Image (cartoon, rainbow, N blue to C red; front, side, top):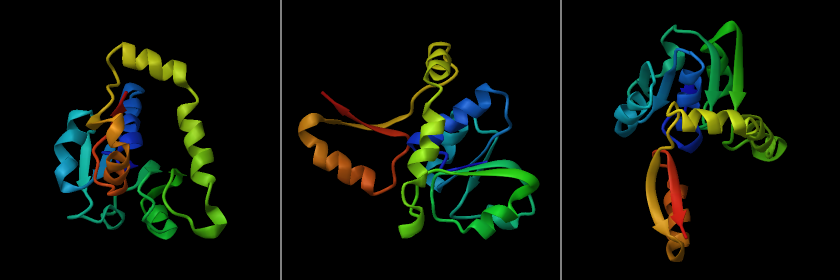
Length: 155
């Protein structure tokens, strides 16, 4: 399961998981359902309509980018030996910075990612582009947290 499947990291995570043969459930908002399906998710959950932690379904791995679920909720959706990976989100004064360390694990195999992109198995999802002169507007746009994929600044 990938929570935040339509975002910049989540859209890559869906495609990487599929490239390695995983059955993927993506969690996103209503407006992103089709995009998440189009990048390979086998199942898509609209978090505005359904609480995946209360369906009774269990997942071997949950990759959580949204940062707004309690650990108790997330554990409820894991299999007994399942793995939870938290990436980003807010963590209060005790946990700030941990997301950065976890993200570094995701981006370290760049050669593998390069090969998957070149083979056409992973395609970056570009939500919107801004010219360099509109960088403040791009930052505000990303801050709204309603992007699908990456926001790009062109130089």
